[in-house]
Length: 336
Image (cartoon, rainbow, N blue to C red; front, side):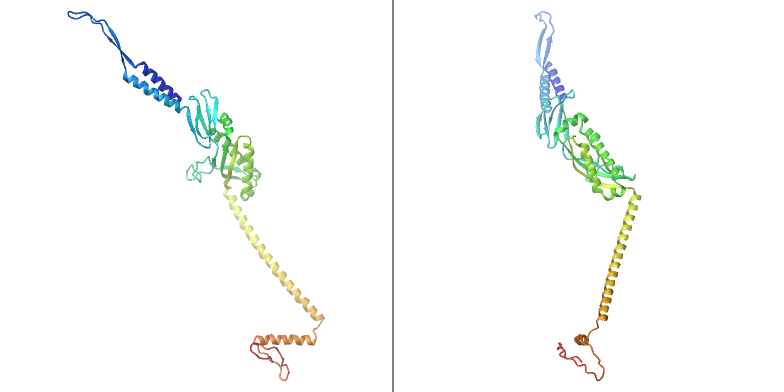
């Protein structure tokens, strides 16, 4: 923009040089009845040149101011670089700021940056949330030598005070994302699964994700870049592995079911053994200590009473005297 201002300045100066036009009247010799007239030079103002100079001057001032004042949004950091490539300043606060007209600005977003590695869906370059993906999923190899595809989403932020150093190393934010962020993320994602077996990679995704976060934070320590959020979207082993794992899971479910049935049968058998043992112990006691006549008579009375309460018919031998005096029931009858 400053170059454009210089162009308008040159245009204004050129127009000023033509703001007046010079006219020369040729010499006229004397003739009968008319005196001779020498050559005359006159200067008249050039209106077009004057207005051109004024317009170019106004544009020069406008572009100069525009190249000196700039606005900065929240969450941005701008580095000022002069025409020789030297860093002459940096601003991190939002609002309007001043700079030298010949200095250029390089903007870095210092918060809420997203990196997404996910496979293209129907040829789209967007991820599941509508953001432009950084690249396809990352292919990794686990401890067992099995290759899997890993999709992930990363959010990171940058310390404002580190932007100048980042500019010195990468010049632009795009180079920084590609050469530093992208390369380090893919390297960590490929490295961590080497410590996990195939089954662990499938079943312990939380542990794998935690290890990746720790490895990434260790690699970025001192760089001014921080991990705000990291999530594994998907881990996709080969189809043969997933089919085998599903079959193993089904077999494990069946084994668990059969074990539960076996345990139930064992418990039932133990109960039957306990009941049988209890009955055997009772018979042993009865055989060792027979009941007295009075005890037997009492049991007979209790049996007859229970039968009478339930409305049962009791038949006794003819001529026997088995009329008992029992407490009355709701039917008000005695038992015979």
